Image (tube, rainbow, N blue to C red; front, side):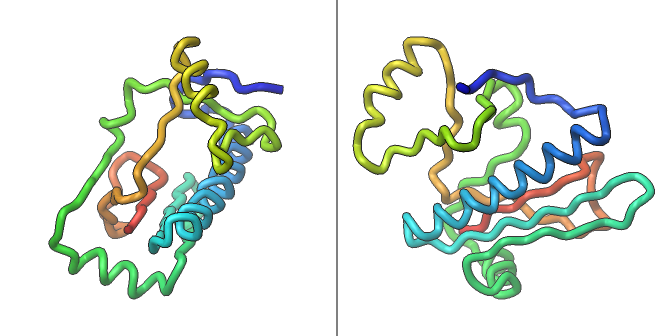
Length: 152
């Protein structure tokens, strides 16, 4: 199967939300690993899941020691590329219906695919891997139930 466009909005059905969270979390961790290996960068992903009636749960992936990576992030005072939810609100993204159909371009044949994608009006959101989202302590979470941080 191919990809289909979905509207990014909160999932109301608990089971669907739980399944989506699990799949996307695993996909995010895999992409973080691949980014670290392919581009020789340090990557950290930290997710806090807070569900009503449950304890806050922490998920993390880090290409190095997570504690030293967070300290490095807090001490860093160089150039930053910081993104937040407002940077992605008006962007339609594509959801993979079949995980086997990954469109990675390591062999150089992606130019035609990108051109076809632009002609069809489809958009694929990509980052340059140098962004970071500030980490808030668990007690200072906003109405969001999940926080993600990518530390270069």
